[in-house]
Length: 287
Length: 129
Image (tube, rainbow over all chains, first blue to last red; front, side, top):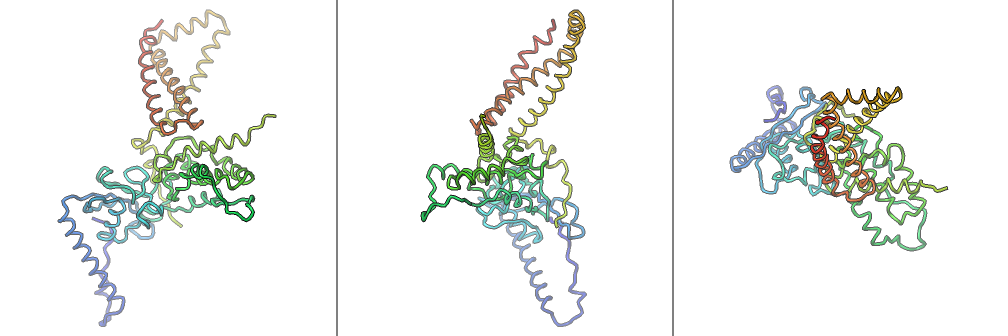
């Protein structure tokens, strides 16, 4: 089922008669794997429905896995199963080398953005029943693959950092809290929901071609603070200055790909368009 | 660091079946834009025959219109122009931030309207002078 390379039988080679610590560990791991396999076989025979996963595999560090390929896993379907659940099952029962990021499993941490059936989705938020089977799972496009389903997020984080994604102001109220009006909070509400999963960046055609483009997530972050009235006029001018650069908002060609894939339903294109208008307004002079 | 590998067209045009409405609108808008620019050059070329004399211009047009290919191309030109105009209006609204949640429907509407206009124009264009 998996193309995992068979472990060489090192037990016979080791000459020491007394069982070393490693030997014990190895044997117990082997037993564990056998148990897993047995449990999986039981599960598969008990469940009448199974999902077939086609998972992208790639590992540059292991000879024989350097060529990207697809592995097929047959996973017993359970009610309410998500793509992440299926991946976890496959990893725990069939191939422990299957690598993917996940953490909170409730669409908050933003670790498991994957390319599922040709679309950027959060693994933990995508129900198996909503997909066409067999399910094809790949790492996010337009990013370097480190291993299996893991992509290098460094560039994405760099773009996020470049818009200064933190509250800053030179207009501090004296001795008071920095209160935000309800209306203003409502305005930035959706933009605060970003979980940095980079699904939008991966889906963006422009970001794919222009590596310096800030990308939807970073611009949305800039929107969140530029629209925050508490930061004051100076800071807003500073923020608009960042986003109206050559590789800022004006690269957006309104394909709406980011808005379509955003797992938190942030109206990204709308925010980018609004910042474009803000940038024009701040630069318009009638004299 | 990580070794990249070439996933090739699989991420881009190889995925054309999975493109969303906004993506198609963008591709068609680019395509029709380039076609219209190309047409402008031929348009200028044909018009410039009028600088020789009125008869030459009439003759040029008549000989062009007598060709079936030209008349078929004219239908295509109308389709391209109609889509570019309609989608241009859609983009105008997108830029103004109006009705962004209906942008995909606007694209489909533009496609349907383009289709209707094109089909309705066929008798006129193919009928000749």
